[in-house]
Image 1 (cartoon, rainbow, N blue to C red):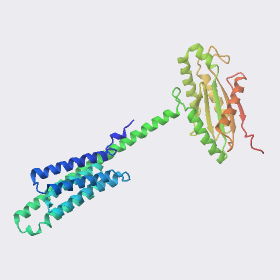
Image 2: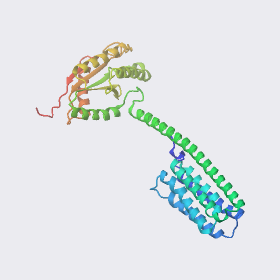
Image 3: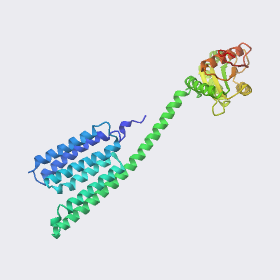
Image 4: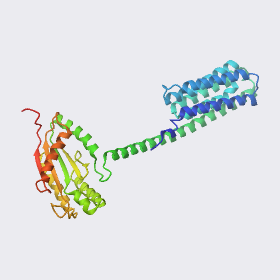
Length: 366
């Protein structure tokens, strides 16, 4: 099965914590190495505040991934901007805002990424042209600011392009993962409701589906038929030919039975051992008799040798058939029990035949 822990969405919070720690450490090191260390205490406090702010957001279990795709980068941006305004260190925003935009990539949310990118670009513009407005007359300062601004716009555009690419790739990967999970679920469901040997539905499916069908038919006043089928002298067959041949025989008979339940709501199921059931919704007596005759003949046509059968020289089956209009007082077990009684009569009447009876709920007074 697919492990959801391998999905980037599942690990987003964990990766965020790692990224913010690395981000803070690298930025602190950058301050000491390339700027100055006079305001190290203020900068350290600011970095710790940013770290705690992100940890507080990430640890909130009520926030969705989409909400965090906005909150994490925007919170970092606002914290960095506030610090720059208070200290006059607007030039530091050049590196910190790029880092803020990168956090949007982690959650791969188009709107969150776009908002963060636009916010950071706007703030950079303000810092470059508003804070330094008194220097705009000096060509050197103006040119430097234009270069810085152009570099920042390119950086943010690059980040947005990469983010969009990652988003599309991850979303596509998520679709493939969901499709694979659905396929696995489908396979597991099929295994849960199918008999491993014969491939037809199993007893669990019969019980659950039959109950639902009867409830539906009782409300709609529909007619229902049930066939209980047993392979004649199958124990003798196993003793004579071995269990391996017995399994082959079961598969062939099951295949024949299932081909006779062709309508959308009809189905065949292995009830247990060499006994099978055929459920025929909205089928009256005539329809049930036709299906029973068809199954009997097709099993005969298989011509599977059976030297130890008292019914014929080949494998045959016996069938119990009932038809009725389900009532709310009746259960699946009631119908199965009555069909089994008809099957018992077939066995004691020479086998290789079917016995039919109409099933009426005797618990309801006329």
